[in-house]
Length: 60
Image (cartoon, rainbow, N blue to C red; front, side):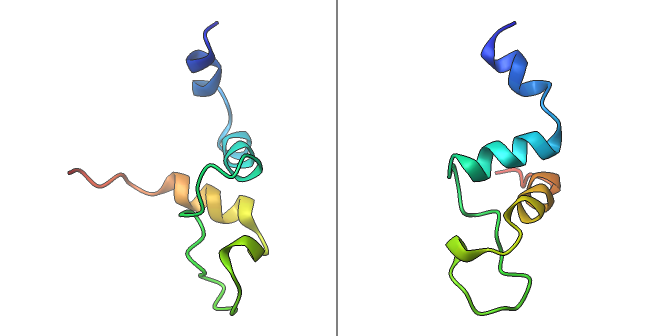
């Protein structure tokens, strides 16, 4: 199994955890909680990331 194959078989939760734990992007947190804080202080980053992963990709 290649690394790419491994990534394709991760659950959405595991993918979100990997993105958050490795600080791959902060674009998943849209501050939808309406709490005044920095992105780094997101109270539920995994849930925010899962919502971000489920969004439709905009075609260029």
